[in-house]
Length: 302
Ligand code: GLU
Image (cartoon, rainbow, N blue to C red; front, top):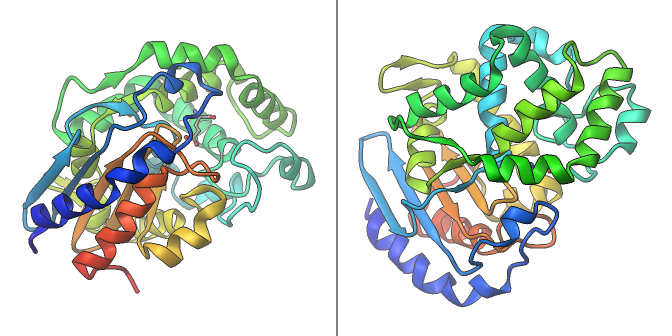
């Protein structure tokens, strides 16, 4: 597959759309990123790698980290995880409180903030230092030991994180957090502030393209890889998940830092970064780029 030529064609095609995205302003540190940055990288199961633009530039992975947190929790918790979190699309904003009240403190899925806070709580209970656990997991899977948190982003989010704090305390009031909400929020804000490049994220997500294995061995079981990919397809791209699946046809997880990672099981992992967002909170140019990638490569799960 001529991935390099495909990425270069996409880069040229989507360049005019880069200034059209809206920068997130609720995490002050993210609003200062240059909106016309663009990077894209793909790894395949035969070991090929291709990249364009700012593919080696690190950015704030934000909600993409929720896939790593879920993976860590699933490794230890297995099916018991689903007693505390659902696995249905939410149909409400990723940081909504309303649904949580109606559904007695059981978040709809692990990729909305409430669900990620519960999953983070599990990782703290299993591993103690959830910040080190997630950072080390990312380092190991992408093979780069200097991957780290952007502490300025974590502080910037904590300073403005009143809604997430409300969600965490709300969960605690329902008995769905074992640890103190402050400890859960601290780990969660850091997880969101992990800084990685498209090249690193494409490498890291290969375990989901390889049925749960990375180059060194199993990370999760093949069934768990299926579960995670299914959740990305149904819950991974905010309230635009139906439109995203229609257009791209691949399991994917996005973040408000402008990154989106998509996986074609058995074939490849692809990551795009373009910081301007669309109205749903997904990268505007990133969504277009992945739609073109699916079309030009001829690959989607459908
Ligand atoms: N750290 C962000 C928040 O909790 C994550 C948002 C996102 O990427 O979806 O609001």
